[in-house]
Amino acid sequence: MKKWILFLLSAAALTVSAQEAIKLTAGKHNDFGLAYSLPITVVNVEVDATHVTAKAGPYYKYAEKYLGIQEIITEDIEYWEMNGINLSTTGIADKDNSYLIKFKSNTPASIYLSPEGTLWSVNMAPTKNFPTEEQTKSSTSKKQNNTYYSVLSEEQLAAGSVGKMAEVAAKQIYRIRESRLNLLTGDVDQLPADGESYKLIMSQLDAQEAALTEMFLGSVKKENVKKTLQFIPSGATGKFILFRFSKYMGVVDPEDLGGAPVYLSFETNSPIRESEEDRKKDNKNKGVTYIVPGKGTVTISSGSKVLKKQEVQVAQLGEIFQFPANMFDDKKEPAKAQFNPVTGAIEEILQ
Image (cartoon, one colour):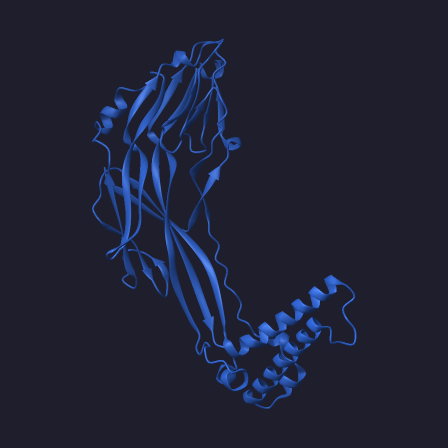
C-alpha cells in the first residue's frame, strides 16, 4: 500500500448537519441486518492566499504636482501572498472495511450513516456535526478594470491633454472637499431635508473623491482565494513537496519549478498496529464495530520555516473493537451510541 495519497482541489470543506444523515432501520426487508463502513481519515491542507492586483492611475505622473502625494502606484502589477495554512480532517468510507450488524428478529433497531456511508450513530439521531469529504469549489471572479468614466466631468473630457485633464480632476477633488466641509459646518444655502438625505449626499461626495483620487494614486484590488489539498496518511512519510507557491501564480503543482516548494511530513504518534488483513478478517459480523484511532503529527514547512504543525487523529492507524449487537436490540432498553464518522471513535454511549 502506498505511504500517502494526495489530491489537489480548489475546495473548502463543508460541515454536514445531522439532518443530512442517512437513517437505516432493521426489518424483514433487510433480514434485520444493517451495513456500514468504517472511515478513512483524510487530512485537508487549506492554503489561504490573496491575489493582489495593483493598477496605476492615468494621472499618476501629476500626483505630486497637484495633490502633493509621492507614494503612488506607477505601474500595473499582479502578485500573490500566502496568508497561512489551516489543517482539518474529514472522513470517507473504507469500502474494503465494511460491516453488517445483525439484530434480533422484530427488533426496532436503526443506525445513521454519514453521507459517505460511515457509521454515525445507533438507535439515536446524531446530535453532533462533523466535517465530511463533501466539497464545494471556490469561485474566482475576475474584476473589471476601473475605466473612471463615471466620474469624468465635461470639462475633463474636453481637455486637450492628459496634463490638463489631471489639472481639472485635481480642481474637482478640491471642490468636493470644500462642499463636504461646507456641509459639515452648515455653511450652505439649504441643508439636506433630513439625516438620511445628509448621509446620502456625504456618501456620494466620498465616492466621487475616492474615484478621482484613484486616478492619481492608483488602485489595489485584493481577492482572497482558498485551495485545499487532501492527504490520506497510511504511515509515516518522509518530507515531500506538497505544492509550490509562486509570487506570480499562487499555488502551483509540485512539478512546477516556477514556485518555491512547500513540504509536508507526517509522523505517527501511535504504536504500529496489526496488519491490514489481520485487522479486517477477524471482525466481520460480530456486532457494532468502532475504532480507537491512531494519532499522527502533520508538519507543513517552507525552507526552514514551519508554517503549520498539528496533531490529528487517524482512523486507518487505529485499532478496531466491537460492542456486541445484543446491547442494541433489547426491546425495552436498547443501548444508544454515537460515533465520529471521521475517525470511527466513540463519541457517546447510553445504556
